Image 1 (cartoon, rainbow, N blue to C red):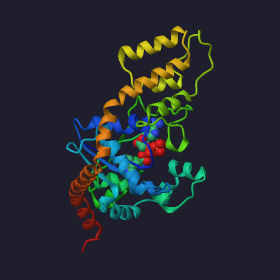
Image 2 (cartoon, rainbow, N blue to C red):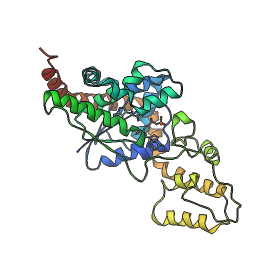
Image 3 (spheres, protein in one colour):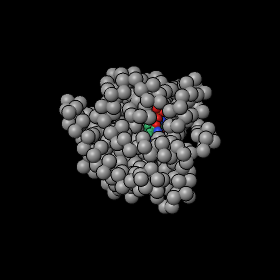
Image 4 (tube, rainbow, N blue to C red):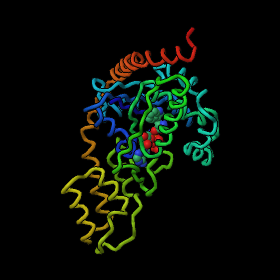
Length: 319
Ligand code: ADP
Ligand code: TRP
């Protein structure tokens, strides 16, 4: 099975990115053909500030979090230019109405982000990313489902005209994680300023955790855990007995949310320890990271070439 995902290099990675997307990708390496790339062209749609630095930061983070270049094809989007060619070709198979209905575009413009063409045609580039590699499964967070559906619609339209050329992709959302809450209880997102970083400093991380919004309940009273933002973050890091033990602490009363926050901080710090150590290594060996990306891009291109050549041929672009 061929699994592909992209991540925008648009800032520090947060635990929503990890549980909603990266972890699924890392886990998929065990039994699938995995493709992971840094979507730097997509990042231009949101300003593209410090893009080159953020691309390296993102690559370093991904390698630290378990993307293994021996198991995955791992590259930077702009190193495989064929994706831009396919983007243009697919544009001719993309009805305006399909893009006008995209929630992500509507949400962004409603928030006051200038409605430029790249923001509008973002899903077409994403479709090109997916279809160029004959991806079968695209692991994403809930907010990206519609984009994968748009890629399917475009592929179907293309295939209706030219036959069975493009693989129709499916999205995969990990049910139990779906949307990771931010410190204010809304969806965790860089753009909402409510994130908990994966690779923050310990003190800063604790400070952020202390800001998580919780119910106002007296210390001795039992507390609801299902609706608690602290619990809903902690449960991502806990399993089995440890999770039950935390639920019991809520039910028992006698502890405040401050105690649960300290526990969350500790559990999270421990969970990412090994990743932090790996990150330090790659941070100190940036040339090695660049070499990995370039080798990944060659592999990705090689795999993409037969598909783009077939597309050029059926559309009459090659002559
Ligand atoms: P952000 O919303 O912080 O800008 P991105 O849009 O860069 O994050 O998302 C990168 C990946 O992480 C996508 O697959 C997205 O669906 C997933 N993701 C982001 N935030 C969350 C969240 N709070 N819960 C689950 N998955 C998320
Ligand atoms: N739009 C995705 C996001 O913001 C990133 C992305 C770009 C992507 N191209 C992709 C994800 C292709 C999956 C497949 O998270």
